[in-house]
Figure 1 (cartoon, rainbow, N blue to C red):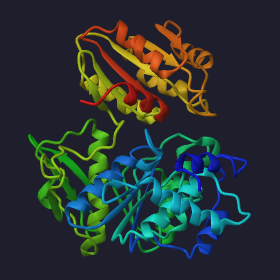
Figure 2 (cartoon, helix red, strand yellow):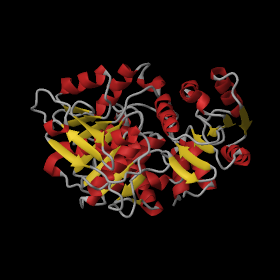
Figure 3 (cartoon, rainbow, N blue to C red):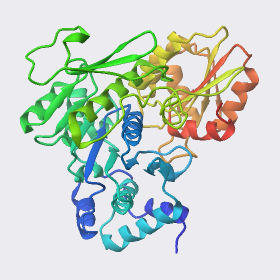
Figure 4 (cartoon, rainbow, N blue to C red):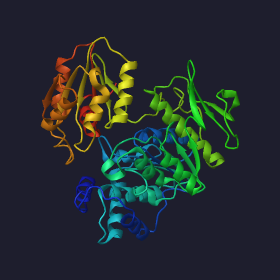
Length: 440
């Protein structure tokens, strides 16, 4: 009998490559397992950024509506169990181990990647949990991602930007086509981009998906103490940009503990998905209101612009590509501090580090760089990370450290009470920082 840790180590070893795009192998094992459907209703959520937050918004709205919901997200920050939730409770080790054993018994001589193995195990856990709705976050791309063996009742693409280009293509049009692969004919296809790639919309149209686009078919408007969500009925030939012209308005929230406009986009996109499913789901439109959901002010995942400590402020963010860095830059501009902003930064070697650094530029007064080569086989070394940062910002004030805890300790030692420390660049950055600093 293997422990959970032993199973996870084993899964890292049974396939020659960590990422192997394609559905044939994972579909064959799934069929050998009896093709378990995770739930009678499935919503898949893809995109470059915002997937995890959108899943949590969906999870919250549905659970407050009284539905039994499973949520699959990745990667995890502190524990593998974070990836698999049933009614907002993480799967325990015994459940995961039992599911891994069933996957192993079915796969025979078929090799599976770490993500494929875990995805099939999640389907097994969910199928046995008596769910009403399963929310499945797409791992990479869409068309060839393991999650896509399931025909979803509704598919969401939150954002499309440049990431994983070695697998998905060199530009937004190529990447958009890959992400559109989760759409299904005759089913709602919700797009959380105001300017989506043409390839995404063309594919949705070609297969006959019921596409809805942020800013065209639905959206949100700020109010003094709330957000108002709007939706255009599909049979309208055009919309007039006044809220009374839209078919449905739902007051989302009183005080929203949401950081950044991208989170409002994610919330609006989640509402649009549930609205498109009509009376097949039950949900509470006011579930994001402060105090209405288990005493929490907002259902956000850890590590997304999360405040951990004060004096100085310590904020963590898992953003690891230029699009996420641009959102972080906008947040920094909206939330100035009296002192200096200091960054604890590490990254995977295959990420667009230069693009991330350029997006933040002079907003960062001092960079505390850490190697991630001990955290991941893909982790960038501190020497190469320093060179790549300096290639963008030749005069940058930076120093290198062997790991994230050392970089964080140095930043804390240097910071005054008026400063801010932002730790970002990877889940492999946020995890160690969360272990070092308890959240507020």
